[in-house]
Length: 477
Image (cartoon, rainbow, N blue to C red; front, top):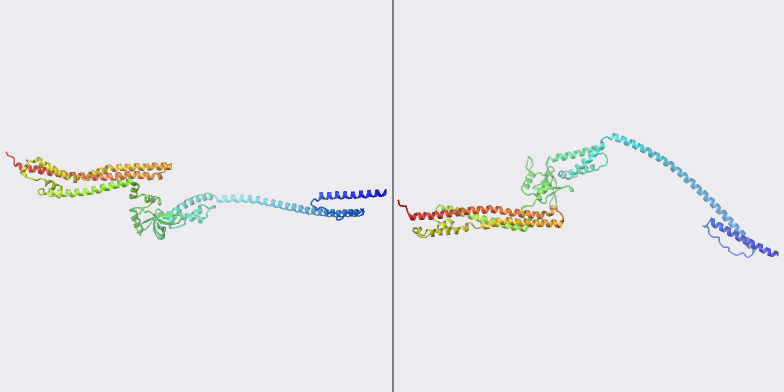
């Protein structure tokens, strides 16, 4: 019985020990979840005494571990308390520094306000002066940049442009320099000078040459006009020079050394000269007329040549006829009157009987000379009438081209319509240009030919009457 009770007591104690160890392990796991699990027992208990010893040792080990953990927890708590105290101290120090800086900032703001008030009071109207200086410097800088005088004094506009973009008040030196550049521009505007400068040829080759300048208006080198390139501070020869008499004036002005001389001046500083140079020449205007213009020119040239030939012929014939009038008794065949007078053949005593026949012969001789005297006049009359008509054809073609350009571009831009309008106007001018001179030429030819024909009629009729009077003899009383 006792033995049974002892066994039960031992079993109860062992079970209690196991439960106690499980509860303690569970509590430790809750407290320190990151701790590694306890190592399993190496050897299983073989008797109750071993089990009791193992239980006693396990409790001792657990007590040691708990003590170590408590010490670690206490050390961590002390360390965190120290860090918290340090952080609070630093926060207090920074708060104090922030208060000091805020106070200093407020003091500086107050001081700046006081100084700004003092500056505004002492500045007076300098702010308005600065604004005026910037505006004036901007305008002067633009003028100097594009001025022909800058070719002689390069990069003088850089300072003025920088002054126009300045953010602060200009100094006295800068204001005086601005005044100097303005005064120099005004002074050089009224001067005609010569200086050595770089001149760029139309082929792109640059060379140093003598340049004659008339204020900021025009510059020449030898007999060639120059234009200024502001971006390169260089003078370049105009690719196309103006027509006579401008090159001669430029050459005389460039060679002059003293006194006064004639010279063209462009008040627009190159704009008007460029417009003069861009004007098309007579040949270019004729080319603008295209095919119709060429036809009109050919007709005009042919008419002028024929008119000149006939005019010379009539002059020669008129001189010969006047010479023949001085000697009508001896007609020659080198003139129309002589050939008409030579047509009187036969017996002079039978003139009265055959008066009608003689008159017809004289008329025949005169009519034979008329075609030579009136030749080319029909063609000239035709050319006079055809010239305006051909010009009208060119005008219609030019207007068709103009309307076609408007249709294609969808706008009335004059530059797009210039080709058609030019062709229309040039054709009209060419047509009238040949018609009017040929009209006067034809009138002159008709006048001269009619004068000679009148002489032939008068002389032939007078000669016939004289012959008839001779055959009748003196009248009886």
